[in-house]
Length: 320
Image (cartoon, rainbow, N blue to C red):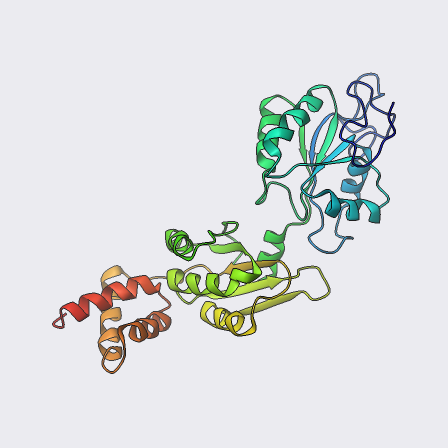
């Protein structure tokens, strides 16, 4: 049999697995061996990996990564650093959005032949903003065992460190890259009474924060950067303040997660509309329509679009 190199997808022939420790917590755990007690557990193992600090991985995860026959990962170079740090020599194969359609049938075939495969992402919990869910779904539909481990998550780390409400939250992944589509996406969730968790790239962070401010109102927010690493930062403030900061300072280094507070308690619609109109009548004289809308939206913590519509109505009918 060919030597077992890390990058050899077929280093272990199906049906002839090498002798190794069983996968799971203990050799005697339910489902870890077959009746003969000679084979490792079969199936797909979904394993979270560190989001920065290589020591943020569970002992159970290390045991399984060592014992499975193959590790499917986004970037073999990134996963290799984790495996090298812990002395793990299990073969790896790339599985990401660009090759998933081609590679997934081979992984499912191996599972059907009794293999044990671990699925990892570059950082954090697989399936959260990556293509892994299709593999998990098809594996489950085919009747293969799927075991999920708890572990690191950029979403939960940012949420718990934000000091914003955690009892109800909505994770929306990466918003659209184009400004118009991004604003529409934020407007669609403006009324959701939950803390929002958003991934964003460094080069788009200033524009995205400004779009959130216009669509959601000037809410409290936190930008989490380089979590679990040496230069970890949780920058807090209003969306407008954060947008201005990154517009001045330029794109920051590191991975970013934005956490936005839920909307405040809204007054009845008629009462709110009357309050908006009163403030706009005070703000419009001597100011441009844009400046007046920004002022009132910020004071009432309302989406700019709602205030703009009221401002247009007043401008077109001064008797209102």
